[in-house]
Image (cartoon, rainbow, N blue to C red; front, side, top):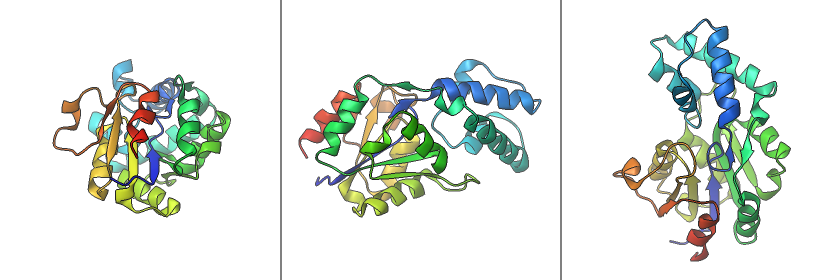
Length: 216
């Protein structure tokens, strides 16, 4: 492989955003008069497209799902977005990588919210592009990752995608992009979680990302 750029997922990869998302999912469902599931189910909203995850859990129509996404984003932007925690050594990792590679973010978060969050944590300085979803949440993760590669002006096969979910891995796979899975996030915990998908490897800690990229 000839890696020339690195693209990161955000939720569960760059920042632990679980606290804010879980809180906002619960309050949004409550406002809509829907039953609030347990914390583990609420945590499953971290990372995947909100509408897709909502429809997987609730027997609801498209309009109700769209209403959930709209209300969630309105509430999330009021302050829950900043209920996030740094992963240890993430700044050191990004600073080290950015000396050698252009970096981008590809997230299912609405793009303006992703920018606000990374600015709040002063992490935007490491990224040459921050790509997210549109207001209607109609863009797929594959399209977002593709947009990040294009904004970096690097071919898909020369980008390395780093993420914590099968959704991230599948997007990379469809684009012919190598993938590293992080097990400290919310989705991927072992190799079998990515069965039949190509990947460079799994890492258990932030600084291991540097180790994987050292050879490139």
